[in-house]
Image (cartoon, rainbow over all chains, first blue to last red; front, side):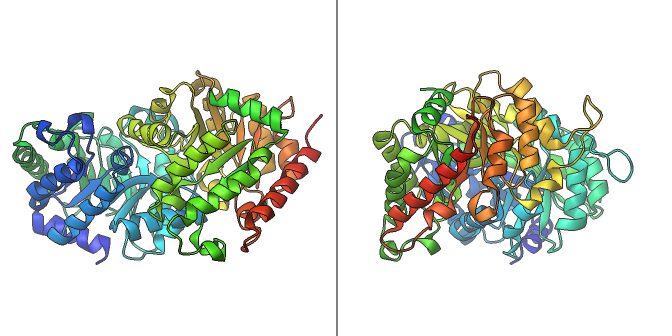
Length: 276
Length: 276
């Protein structure tokens, strides 16, 4: 199924804009899992099973798996999600960006090896560095635009001119993606919850393009401001990602129940502010 | 040893600015290796052993290994280089870029898991996305600046203003890295051989900062123009990367000898144009 079709169905069927981020940090895993050979997989699997009915998508962050030599556990995790929760799409958070011949290899990694439904990609190297992902017409490609970290401003806030005489780099990226790169209808953008004004601006520039919004929870982004700034006209359009606040709600054996409680509260806190 | 110290020693001792890129594409491997379980490692190992005395550094491109589920072969390859050719530093070409907590994981992947001496990183997310790599004071951090692909112009050529009233994004990146981010003296920049005017401009902006220059060979960059534009005052300063032209010089059992011939010719073609 096309990523966008699956995402829209998940938004509607689950009544949820919550994206559950899977960033398994070994230093924070529940004590009873520590040291077990498949601890990362077991931890994420329990989180997934406890939150799948609350989430519009899952977003494993590949760095956490790669740092632990746990690619096989990431493969098993995504396979588990597809088998047990086939209606929840998986975004591989990888932020890749390279010349075409190398991007082809990254696309093989994300879509063929891991079976991800979408991938995050950096726009710095331009359109031809993104096109190899478009060769998979059912897959989503979510480009970095205005990231949630403070340092994002270093480049993304630079004024690059433009038709109206003033346009910041992230606005140019939003416009390029929405108006020129998204010919296959499979693009989205990353816009951090820590910058609601910029979410509103990106929404204004991109119609109903899906926005992946990290930065609530541990990073301090405001849910109400995010939802009010970012929802599309039909009250969806957002994948609001929370990772640490859900994953590490408890370090006891009740971690999955605790994660479910936080995920439920987060989904509800988002829904309160959605236009009806 | 500090990456920069090792790089300078390799430039001098080997009289070479050639970086041998290791991009093992399974579709192009020598026929007699096809289908073997460790084909990627064996292929790269033979290339490395045949070219180590000609190269100032090796640059494995992680995408080619990840697409083939061959992380263990990448680990073994870098370990082999360190053991057999300890004087040749290894740059992991990964072009990572993420928020600090995730960048910490990528740094663990590159420097602790793989034992790379340096990594390539995207600047799009700003300084705080790069700082976790600086926590490893001996390691090199090579930031994308003006990439070798045509699409690189989409963002990197945008005029971002600046003190002189006109500055392109890649120039701003060069200046930020050289003047502000490089406090530990371990930064370099990626500037494509396909754009010699921009190499010259980056050299002008960055003093003797090492430049990693892909794009000769298969991508069509001109060696003479690259060397004349990019050498630092002492005739070094460049890591001129060639991958496909060396790796796939022959698909027969003589592939390593053929690679050595092309690497020798490339090193010599570079040296002809170096200032003396």
